[in-house]
Length: 330
Image (cartoon, rainbow, N blue to C red):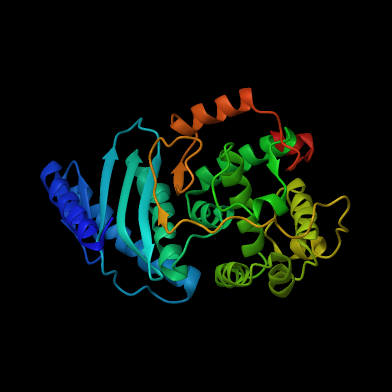
């Protein structure tokens, strides 16, 4: 699609949004919702998250976007929480933003919106697609504690049933796997583990180093001191078994104390170059290769997808398994 065609499509989209319901315009967003009050609440929160989360992750605010980001919102008490953000990259910059949010008011404001805003911050900062685990893991990490607790419970289930993803395989993923939910839970857990060892800005530097060099083992050693992805994986697994503590004393006891044993190859296999477009959908196909997907498992497409994949798929040879103590599964 040509640049003129994209501009026309965006103008048409904004015009359609304005005709659909109440709207509210901020510097970087135009929100369409059922009521003017809700549209304003979402718009102001979007600007606040854009500013505050950028400072947390990057150490500074983002400059204003050239393209305004339309946000459509559906809010209902029993509506499953989920969101989608699409954009494309051109000359190292994201363009053509489109964001949709749905769920109860509380989850939209404290989980779905900050998750999607984090995607836009990372896209703006890096100017290209991120590894799936890092993008989704970081975006999930800013959600409400109740949602993070769900991710932890699902992670324990995935790791104890052979659906975990070996790190050499996970770090190589530029597209979403068919069994998508373990990527979210495991990506979030690893991001939490790394952030506990140096903060969010160090994590962003690490991801940038790994993306630029293409050598994740060297980047991991430089930023976190692990000799290999295998050692990182084994230490992370031990941390998960102990309840994922973030206290410095608990982390210090783990770091360097876990010797890798039977770990996978250190470096991920070469993957095709990522697409310059990132598109999302509320209910994408399992084979969608350029999606930045997000939805919670309760009452959503992801719940149905999880059940279908769980029934049809056997664990792959690239999976990892851990049997946590029974107390962790309660």
